[in-house]
Length: 500
Image (tube, rainbow, N blue to C red; front, side, top):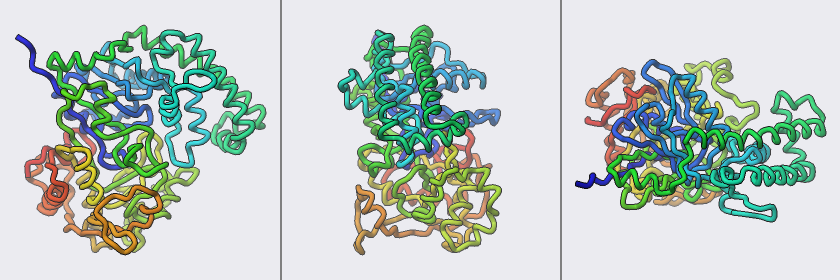
């Protein structure tokens, strides 16, 4: 008697990242045998709150790592920094979470080399990257090769001929060093000023120090792949995932980043370097079409994004964008010392109200610590994303933070959402695709009744205030997608099945 065929469900972000996907995976993973990743790399940052209140952040590994009975898969669509993967595993071990023999990393995955990371730190600030070399790795994947040889160094390439890879990376460092001297001089000086060990050195001595570190990192990069191989974490069989599904295993795919910064659907250049939609995540996780299951989209009740780029309806507009991109970063500690929340909430300036909402909601990047830019929930964009990507159900996180609006004098304490766009004085029913158009968009706000109650202790969605219930039903009606859960706090147990 044959086993029933398994399926691969997927959870993706419907905003610009930081929607709480990791927590949704964390809770739902209990019903699956395998948790996987199919796009992105260590630029992801998923914060998980454990039962004892400890917070951990996973970057490259699937959020299901916290369950000791779940197998973990990093698919061919991901980019893998071997050094950072081992560091992340060590951090998990320090929190009593063991990977053991559960991890499977496709050898078809492209590697992120030390040179990718350095080049990203030199050049990525203009568009607000995390400096993890992700874009450079994906660029090499698409380019395939150049005059020096392979630009797409997959895990299998390092594994099969490490000396050849080492020689190639040494050649690439020589080329990058010339570029630093001839093209990136100003950027290199800025980079050195941010490094404690380099800022007092002259450019020549700083370059020597960087060269020493790069060559050491290349050795660590190659050794890390060998360590992963010895641990049995490298999966050479491209059909491994499908073989598990054919045996009846249930797979949960976790999308990195979000549809708002998808390399196709986002606004260039302010996007991530991979496709973040459910189709791409499952393909990147090496899942055949016949195994694709349901798709859950996660959205925050108050929209946020990090990095530069247009953000319709942002509290404070371009002033907020520049503020959040400042160097040094005005992060959590700085804002707590600088501002009084009560004073900000009385302001008629959306920029100041946005800072208050950020402080109340602890909206700072899990990977970078950068302040997240905030805006009302964009239902106009959400409607389009649900339709394009075939979203079956939606999880709304941070519903509890909507109560923060009740203390703001703007909008008379009611809850704003973006219900429509005007461009050039005319209403439009689509999401513009260029930066210039999005910066000209005028958002039409729709106000929903406030609720004053702290809902973080509620354990049944039917007990939510009627205004909160009405808000959720309105989102379901406008997007034509069912609501499966709502979040009323950061804990796993604060993610409530929607039954109201």
